[in-house]
Image (cartoon, rainbow over all chains, first blue to last red; front, top):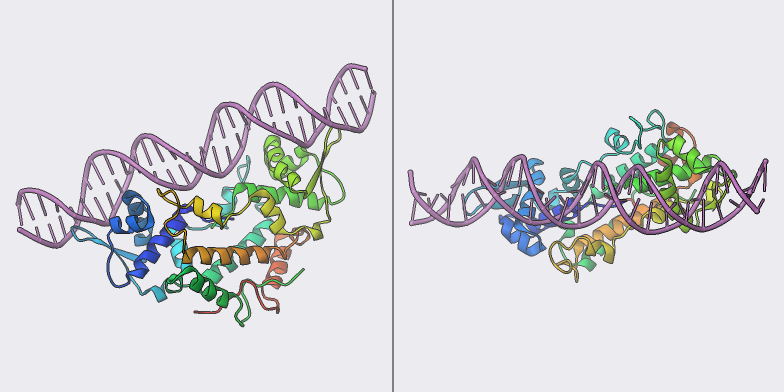
Length: 161
Length: 161
DNA sequence: GAGAAAGTAGAAAATAATGTCAACATTAAA
DNA sequence: TTTAATGTTGACATTATTTTCTACTTTCTC
């Protein structure tokens, strides 16, 4: 289980924008701050723009800017924009071995498990906003942990078997 | 966020063994049932054996067999055996762009978030055993859902911001 | 308008993940 | 004790992902 570089870098770029919320940033500037090439950042921003999370300003003095305040953008939105994460037909298509369709296509316990687990993970991420990622590591850790151990009945909680 | 083929296929092979718990299965047999090549299954089984989750029987009438009953093997164990999932130094190493180390190495809110989210996800998976994946899709779905909505206070639950 | 400073898009190169192959090691059975 | 059926290993081929490159479009400033 891992996140792709597109997801990681994309999220980082968007967090940079969140740091400068209200102002636009040029691709070059983001690239500098994240240690990425300008061309690469440009490519990363593309899906985020198509998803409507950021707006581009073209021409001289152009750049990117968040379309909403950081408090109003969830991590699930960002990750989905960057990479339609498939545990659905797409998933089964890419895990079919040498057959034309997965041998478990009609009935698959593992699919049921992945489906629920990832669904709940994204559900959890949908409660974390960009605003909550601003601040230093300790502060963010504290905040997220708050979430995880908070009272409400519980998307991704599991009791022992 | 996605799972690799190694993880998916590895889990499937191990579930096949769970179906035949107590008896050994030959690589060829597993390959047939999963629609994979014999050579590929052989490769997949290797890390599972090294992790001690399965034992190999060499020579004529050889095969693989679970070293513990399906109820005693968790998904986290299987996934870790297949792929050391890194959100640690390894993760930061592979997400450092063009720099020698990630520009956020010393302090990274995103790292804190990934760390906690994946930790909790694996925590959740550590409560699901191979035994719980046996049965048809509907049954498994029901079982896992039970877990998610059960009473106890809650690794991966999140409350709205 | 002209020119320069942006973003855009798609091709190409580099890298990593996936899957196959062939030579080898082990062991049950004849 | 040979033989054939198996797992083991590492090198190779293939495919997918990541990253760069190049040509193009838009728009601000003069």
